[in-house]
Image 1 (cartoon, rainbow, N blue to C red):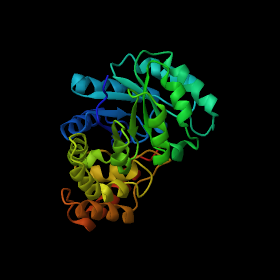
Image 2: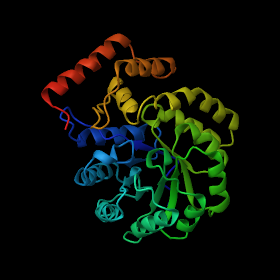
Image 3: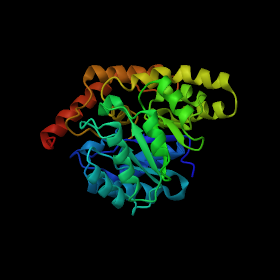
Amino acid sequence: MSLGRILTAMVTPMNEALEVDYQEAIRLAQHLIAHGSDGVVVCGTTGESPTVTDQEKIELFKAVKGALGSKATVIAGIGSNSTNSSIALARKAATTGVDGLMAVVPYYNKPSQEGMYQHFKAIAEVTSLPLMLYNVPGRTSANLLPETVKRLSEIPNITSLKEAAGSIDQVSELKRLLPSDFAVYSGDDSMTLPMLALGCSGIISVAAHIIGDEMKEMVDAWFAGDTAQATKSHLELFPVFKGIFITSNPVPIKTILNMVGIKAGRVRLPLVDATNEEIKFLEKLMNDHKKIKVSNTNKQAQAFSELKVASESVHPIV
């Protein structure tokens, strides 16, 4: 089963009370599919998975897959640093109609490579759905090594990897060791084109929230053999790829979505809203990019600041 080339790691929209806004999640998912994405990952890092409850996750999986149906791939983020909790959520997610599951390397625990192997193996054994591994050492403090991924690839329903270690050498070793039908996705927007050049399958993107059509043009150009156009697109998009990580993801991308009229809402603690300086940086970033314009920079920053103050006075963050 092909998951697609561009999957957006979707934010979890919140209302002013910091409750999950399921209707806005549906609208956002539909918007993403209409603008370059082949599918979405729900409740990954960008979806604030550590602070979204399991029940909220299940409702999100149902809502998004119910809205998209067979038009797009929906991958459910079910991983945590507890194997038993990940297994329980995997079982529940499998009943929602999603197309696959994604499980992150256990964070904080710092498991050994054997511990990681046994963790992912245990999750895979409780479902027939395709399972994507997610390696992001900058978030987890543990690096899933290529040799361990190779072992895991021998388990039939472990079919793909989201690789966000930031190392082209590690990607090269992965592609050298893994079977050709095992899909490796970039977990960093700026690494998309270099990883495609090494034979990877696509990107699980944050930037596609706002430049999805342009990313599709870049990826399509690569697969059509137009490497010059793909490179040109990469270089044009590079400032956006890097700029949307000015502070912890998903704070910047939620801020930009709110700026352009998509109701992403705020973030739950321990994340906090963008500062006024960060808001101004993000507005300039968007205005400097030829296809995204945010006007009245100072008014936008002031309005967003006032929204935060008003929301906090009525609905304290919990």
